[in-house]
View 1 (cartoon, rainbow, N blue to C red):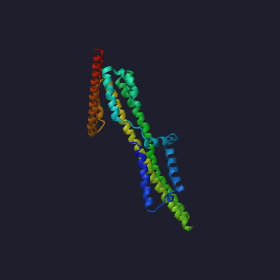
View 2: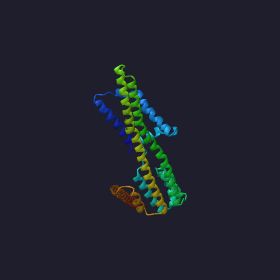
View 3: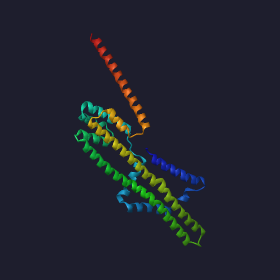
View 4: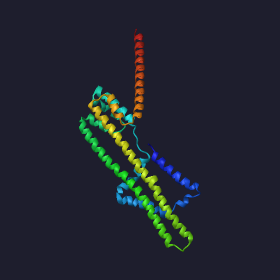
Length: 288
């Protein structure tokens, strides 16, 4: 998922403008400032009018998030939750406090801290539900902003086209070069409006929506995990419950991966035991 949006947009630029150059066009022919001002300026103005200055000011950060999203490995988080459940069953829930520094995701750390502080499971569920509702509201505002920009952009392109045709008709009977310039400006406005909508605005909105869905899945996994750890459920039950977030094929692969890691730990543990026994025997012989 990382950088796929940036790569996709770059591929869109290369494919469309590359095909135009292949047909004998020049990039300079597509750069007409009046047409681009109508499309870009009009789209931003419409977005600002339909939302707020604060929302427009967030655009650079939202672009960065869609281009370089922060990603957490859900499989690693599940494994960490299972490990914490083993410790909690053996040593008690309070023993997890010293291990919180190893938790990478801040929200999972928050949930385990609530468990350690003695919050009952129902309270934790209510807190997470409230957090998820507010997160959804914020994310939907950002997603809808880009989707609306994708709707405004082609309309601004049409406005630019109409204005170009009006200028063409107004200059009828004058220098043919001026007429050709106005006609080109009209079509270029439409091109930029459609291009920006389908290569930039709508894809970024879709990426933000995809990131939101991924985050909601992650929050559900962490909530179910922390809830189960606090209830003292068996680690194997917790793993099976959390793995249901994945398709069956991925669940089978995860089971094999977990089994391999478990066998590795057992093998390492046996080696350490054998080594410690050898050291003990060696020390006993030295004493004799």
